[in-house]
Length: 522
Image 1 (cartoon, helix red, strand yellow):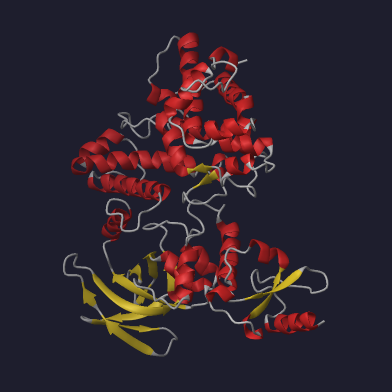
Image 2 (image 1 turned 60 degrees about the vertical axis):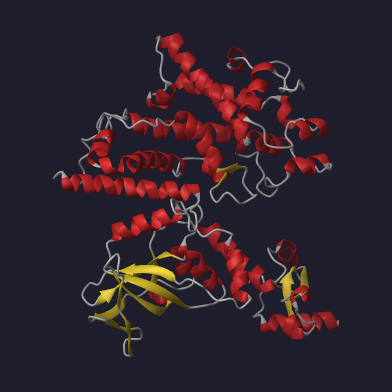
């Protein structure tokens, strides 16, 4: 009875809600527990001020023993669930600002030679020094702003807010200060500026999750935005100050590609929708940036494919590369699908070539890669892969006797980069053989997906993937096989040897016999 009385008192303080998930608790209907807010291992005391009522289920799956961190991560997971399917690189800082009531107001300013005045509440005028960067010539100032006056810049830094935010939350809770302020830019227009944050999003989001509503920022005033974009991109790629995830690098490269196209149009006196020029024309025009332009072209193809709303495989891809929830990493996608089927050579025909009739080579390449990925998703993952089980140490769990469903085990094993690579090798050979036998054409590997496939080709591709996915080896639970074949990362050549001969290079039988395209097409 004493425990229930304590729970009622605590629940009244908590507004009737679970300390972790902040959803209502009914002490009679729900299973609940009382736990330390700050764990004893971190110096938390055994007294009422350090107790909280939580759902039993929340306490079991909490993401940290410190309930303050667990609550922040529960808030993060809610925001992630709400926004992650609304577009690439979500949730971003803009989503967090939206959830916490930020990004509402422009800032009234008056700019002087060496200081700037601003008004927050409509009445009180404040001022801060205005500095000039000696090397770039850009003006900037430092200011602490309520989140209502802060906006997110998706163009310069589209990075999603990932689960690594937990480390920042722990740092701030420990009383360690933010060492670098967020970076922002603003253009003055009729005495008003809109403050766009383009760096330091994770720090800002972590503080908002902890209840902070004012953030320090360094604001570049009336800057050259292209210079900021390139500087920020290089910081996260070439200089690797805080390296961008590869998918974010590709997204930025795609944005820069289209900005280069706009620049090319302006400097050659073309209309803003003119596409009557080629990728090779861009390379010749920006000859001093030849290597970068070539990369931006490919980044645009990669981004268009993986972030296509119709791409069903992207739901099974972990873009940050650190989660154990999804079976595929973005790196695996690049080293398999993109390595095989994206033409890396700049095209000579205009960007507008046969675009209206759906036969533009680059557009075909993008659309057909999405279709291939959808077939892989449908045959291996959709309705089969269990996100709750995830991908973490599945082989180890299997060897310990844990029950792993066949479909989930199959999906995990087929997701290995070296295995997926060799599956796509057979897809490539299937396509090449079709063109050779039915049309007498020899098509280069990197041009395959720039040719429009007939319906029967897609039937063949699906058969190849389905038949390989149905091989017994993917659900073989023999501990020896699990350890020797799937226990660690193998090379591409290891699985090429297995697929070609049925045996590992050391002679372990894995398949009844080597794979044959004729068999795979039945």
